[in-house]
Length: 234
Image (cartoon, rainbow, N blue to C red; front, side):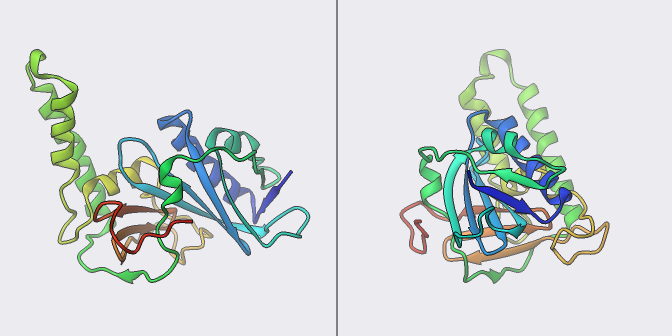
C-alpha cells in the first residue's frame, strides 16, 4: 500500500480538515491526488459551488518505499480521510476509483500571472457574508408558491455570479474558499510565507482559468466553457 508521509501532524490535520469539509458537502466525493517530489496536491469539487478546490501538503518523502517519483490517482475522499493518521503524520492512498468528469480537466501547473483588483481579505469575507445574508433574505421573502428550486437557483446564480471588486472572479469562488476553511487567518508554518494572523489573498490567471490563492489552499474557476483553449487534460 502506498503511504504518504507528511512533514508533521499539523500538515496531516489540515489535510484531514479539508477532506472532512468535502465529504460534508458530498459523502461520495472523489479527489485527485498528484504528488511531485515532496509536494502533494489534492483536487476536489464541492457540489453547487462550480469551482475546483486545491489543497497542497508538504511531504517528508513521497512514498514509503521511496521508489516511485510521482503519483497521480483519483480516490475516494472519505476513504482517504479515514486513512489519515495525524499523530503519525501519514495517509494511506486508497484504491483508485473511476473519476468524475472534472478530474480529467485540471488547471495548468504553470503560466500563472498576477491579476489586479482583488480586495483585502476582510473585505472579501464581508462580501461573502453580505451575499449569504442577501440570499437568505430574498428567499425567505418569497411566497410559498414561488419558493421553487428553479427560483432559488435563479436567485443564487444572480448573487454568486457577481464579480468581486474589479476582477472577473465570481463571489461563489470566495464563498467556496470560506466554506472550505481557506479564508481563516494563517498560522505560522503553513508554507505561505505569511506572518501569524495575516490572511493574504492573491488572484492569478492562466488562459481561461482564474485562481484565488490563500495560505490554506486555492479556488480555481473557468472564465469560459470547457471548450476553451488552455485546458490541461491529464
